[in-house]
Image (cartoon, rainbow, N blue to C red):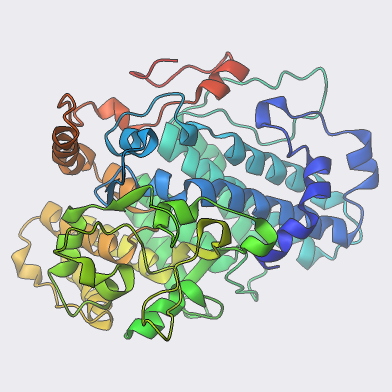
Length: 484
């Protein structure tokens, strides 16, 4: 099932699953949906597709904003209020990307699938279990985004199924969501997934192990992260890093199917799925971008002229000129005439969004190795990737502490995974947000002649809960110090 097929049947599925409403307004599962739907193999396929449609809608709209925009990867472009608020730590409950409605819509669809799939007798056990695995893993993935962004969050693991049932819930602690929902969901998915399938456009065994590695690293459970990443490396499919030319590196993003460097990708086809916000975030050929690359990261790219990732990420000819670098090249194919990527307009933006890549898992493993005393193993991974990408090797002896070695791994992750919804979470996970982002925000505030407040309040690492969610669910309490 490729993602681009989903929109062809989204409307009837969304209606049956209650996905057209925001999660706190969803209606009970009607007798129509349970009696007439979830009966055939095609119903199961449509239900599975609806989950992926939810992932598409959630992440194409928020992928860059949630995982990159507040970090040192980007700064504001132009004078729009939205991008200035996001890049200067000025989030409020009215900021559009604080709204988690699409995320919970996806969770609601997964909940319905988990409840209904066991009763679809037309499905064979292998197919039923494979769909169940994808529903469990997708639910875990959405809750993982939620706890990293908002901390404590309300939890639904079953559909809202009765008019007598209160749809409003208070927040559960982030730790309980991680330990009682996310990890059990991923472990369950691992037992159910069809291990013979490796389609990069659907959740597979490799992506579940990648998610587990990511979750264990968030918890700082380094032994568990080493175990799950070792299981990932040992898979028969043999995921690996191998791109050593600009063309092969480009293929990770424009032709991911069957690529050993790619684990899981979302495919957005504007001819079927319509317009998305990725073009606004990455830059387009007819509009200015919401963000531009911060000079602090272009300096890192420019420091090694042989690094293929530098050429793949942005137009290096713009470096040192007065032109702002506001287009990300890595997601688009090259035009043979101009030898530059064919940047689409916003409304014609086709993009394949990497959710997990092999290099991501390996670099998380390097971070865990460093934290458990294996500095040599950590730099072996880092330098293998750098060798393939044409970059100079890092000298382990130059990094004399565990923290310094971790900085080297994080720098590598920034270069390798730029604009892939990773950098902000890396800074949060390793406790580096204030150290890295505060001086950048102060500089931006000076540029705009704003009061210089910087980023000194660690409470603002969490996102505010949207006004919409607070209004709909009075049991929610806003993250301090944000106002309602």
